[in-house]
Length: 357
Ligand SMILES: Cc1ncc(COP(=O)(O)O)c(C=O)c1O
Image (cartoon, rainbow, N blue to C red):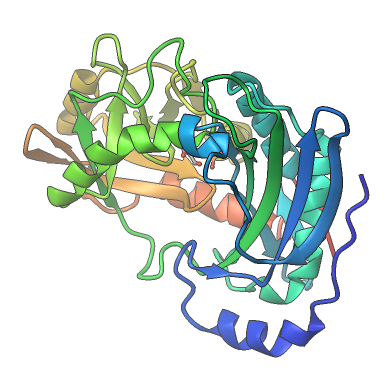
C-alpha cells in the first residue's frame, strides 16, 4: 500500500521551537497521523496521512468493551549527518502481527506497517530532535471499531500511527532506578496474553505499579505466575543482570514480552566483547548474588529508555542496593553502543536503521 506523506512545512516554525525545549516522554504529539482501515470485504485499505484529530468512534466500539487493542512503540532518530532513520521498524511490524494473532485481529502486512510509519516520519521530519537519546517516538495502534455487544472478534478495525517528539529519557543524567519485586500480583500467566503488546497487559500491571510508586519505586519487578519465584521483566522493560562479568537475561517465554531492545542487546553485546547468556534466576538467587557481590549490575531494556540501570531492588519493604546503586560500566557501554547506531556514528552491522529522509 502506498501512503503519501503530507507537506507539513506550515508547522515548521512551531516544530523547531518546540523540540528545542523539554520534551517529556509521550506528551508532545505532532500534528498529523496515519490511518488505515480494515473490513471483511476490502481487507486493509485507504491508508492516508491526515491531521491528528479526535476519532469518531461509536460508544459500542468493541475495543472499548472487550479490549481488542494492540500497539507498538518504536523510534525515528535524526543522525549526525541530518538523515532520519527508523530503528527496527520491521521487528515492530512483525511483533504487531503476533499480537494481532493472539487477540483475533487482522494482521497488518509488514510492508503496510512500515509504509505507515515512514509516511508519518517523513511528514513530521521537523519534529525529530537531534540530541543524543532524543527521538520521534512512534505509536502504531490497532483497535476494533465495530459497534456491537457480545464477545467475539469484531468485523471492522482501525490502525493508526501517532508520533511524539521525545527528549533524552535521562534528562537528569543516566541514573539507577528502584524496582519493587512483586510477590502477589502477576502480569501474565502461561497461556495468557503476556507476549502480546496489548493494553490488557498494562492495565493488569497498574495496581501493582501504583503501590510500587507509593513505596518510592519506579517500576515493578515481575515474578513468574506459577511459583512467584523467577524474575520475568519489569513493567515496561526486559531485565538483564551482570554476574561475574557475564551478562544474563531470562529466556523469553509466553509470559515475557519479546523486547526488541532485548534482542538488540543480545546481538550487540558479543560485538562489544561482552559475554551474554539467557538464563532463569530466582529472586532469592538474585538477592544472594547482589548481597555477595557476584552480581554487579542490573538494568532494564526497552525502546523508551534503551538501557535503564536498576540501582535498588525493594523486596518486602527492604531495599537492596545493586553494587553502589550507580549505573555500571556494561550498562553504559551498551547504551553508548546502541546510541552510536541510532545516531549513525558506528556501522549498522545488523541493518537495523531504515532511512526515511
Ligand atoms: C512489558 C514490557 N516488556 C518489555 C518491553 C521492552 O520492549 P522493547 O524493547 O521492544 O521496547 C516493553 C516495552 O515496550 C514492555 O512494555
